[in-house]
Structures are given as structure tokens and as C-alpha cells.
Image (tube, rainbow, N blue to C red):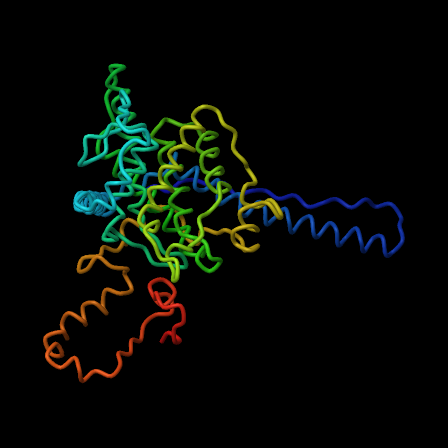
Amino acid sequence: MESASVGSASVGSASVGSASVESASVESASVESASVESASAKSAMVDTVLEQIVDYVLYADAATDGALATARYDLLDALGCAMQALNYSACTKLMGPLVPGTVVPGGARVPGTAYVLDPVQAAFNTSLAIRWLDYSDTWLAAEWGHPSDNIGGILAVADYVSQRRWQQGEPPLVMRDVLIAMIKAHEIQGVLSLSNSLNRNGFDHVLFVKIATAAVTSRLLGATREQVLSACSNAFIDGVSLRTYRHAPNTGSRKSWAAGDASSRGVQLAFLAMRGEMGYEHALTTPNWGAADVIFGGQDITLTRPLGAYVMEHVLFKVSYPAEFHAQTALEAAVQLHPQVTSRLDEISEIRIETHESAMRIINKEERSTAAA
């Protein structure tokens, strides 16, 4: 696998004049110079993260045999989840065009339905269905998430681009293009998740979906480097959802359409970039107003490993039960123990569960809980 070539940023140091000045002034100038160097170095490091994502999307060959094979399974798994979700009215009532009856000529089709929508709304519909049952893939790190959330945006844009190409007498995209876009979206979301925790600050993981979808769909649309940078930087500064809807006492159905919301917004930002909307080179590092300070409390936004195919090659599938991944073994134990206790439930005085600290924060719906093991 070839890796994207990313140059290192050169950071110059501030120059302090040699004029004769008071000792205190020299010390003050020296401190100020060091401060400028430190701020500049921090800015260069974090902006390099943004540049790495852009260069990876445009230039890296991430199509390893293992990643392509897993991406195919991941796509089948996601579409299977979406087809099952169509049996639930709570899901389907949110689907379709915003204005009933709208059909978009040359628009994107929503799998399993008769809807033909603009790519932004199609992305929302498809990612909504994929995530509705909480049974598609998962990724566990400093931040949690489901990289398959990006598939709705990828399929919508790929269908739209292919139909336009047909109309112009050009060959459409092929499924290999879709699988490669999935590999790269998985990688961007997953590697960002390795070291950058949104949940610790009360924010939801779908910000990384928005960034990944914006990056790979702008590439599918034929974006230049400047346009991919625009889509990605706008995704970073676009804002981030609170995790309110994932925790007691506010746990609610928005957790099932948050992915569709993020993926569709990523697609919209990609289209805006294609129209020449500007990007923001220091979106991550600007003091007070940048993503690092506002979202991560001043912590650097980092990529702790080179972008390649690692996430797709190691993504997790929920094979046994449609539940949050930390609960899989608990459910397995409960199902196996059920025959032994079902006839003497009145003998049970309490149930004590020991689990991961992250599981307590993600899926414990009690307002007050005991400490996790």
C-alpha cells in the first residue's frame, strides 16, 4: 500500500533585533518571541493534521486486499441493516423528501425505496436507515463511533455522479470507487477517534462522520486540493452536536438519525466547496475560535498513526446482538444464563453488573450509577 506523502511544515522563529536595550526589555522580547514560536509551532502541527487528511483523500492508495474485502462485507452489512430498518415506521416517517412528492431529476436513489432525492437529502435517508437499529459496524477508541455512518453520503454522491456521467456519455463510477471511498472515510473517522475524545467534553462522535464524509464525497465529485480543504475545514468549524440525546434523562430517537444528519451535512459542504466556497487553513488552531480550543478545550487535534487502511482492516462488527458493543458479552451471558434462572426469579434479590467505565458512560441509562469496574 502506498501512503500519502505529507510534507512537514516549516516553522520560522521570531527575530529579535540586536539594538541595545534594557535587560528587562530583552527578557520581555525573548519571552514574547518564545511565545510566538510556541503558538506558531502548535498551529503548524494541528494544521498539518488537516493537510494530511486532504492529501490522504486525494493521493493515497489505501486499497489493500484486506481492506477491500472488509469494505465489501461492511457495505453488505450496512445495507442489510438499512433494509431491516425500513420495517419500522419510527424510521420511515423521517425518510423521503422534505416537501412531500418531490422527485429530483437525475437525483440520488435511496436503497430499498422509490425515493429519488437531491444527494444531501438522500444521504440523510440512507445513513438514517443504516444506523436506525444500532446493528452496523463500530469503532472503539478515545472516541466511539460507527464508520459505516458515512456510507449514506458516499452512496448518494456516487449515484449522483454516475448518473451525470451517463448523461454526458462518460463512464460511471464503479463499486471499487465506492469501496475505496469507504476505506478512506473509515480511516479518517477512526484515526481521528484514536486520540481525540469528543465525549469527554460532552460532544457527540458524529462530528468525525461529518468531516470524513465531506472529505471523501468532495473527492468523488472531482474536487481539487483547495476544494477538499474547503469541505474539510468547514466541517471542522461547522459545530458539533451535544451528546444530550444519548444519556438519561434525555435518551431519545435523535441518536438514531444523528448519523444521517452529519453525513448529509458533509455532503452539503462538499457541494458548496465545488461551487468555490472558501476554506479555512487555520480552522483547527486559531486561538479562542479554532476547533482545538473550542471543542477540545485547548488540546491539540492529532493523528496518532499514518492514514492508510488500518481502520477498515480492524473494524468491529456486531455479529451477535443489535446493541452497543460494550454490552455484547453481557447480553451473551444473560441469554445463556436465562434457562438456569427463569424458574426462580423470585429468589433474586439484586443483580450486580461489573463493566467498563466507558460502558457506564455510554449505555447506563440510570441518572445515578455506582462506580464501574
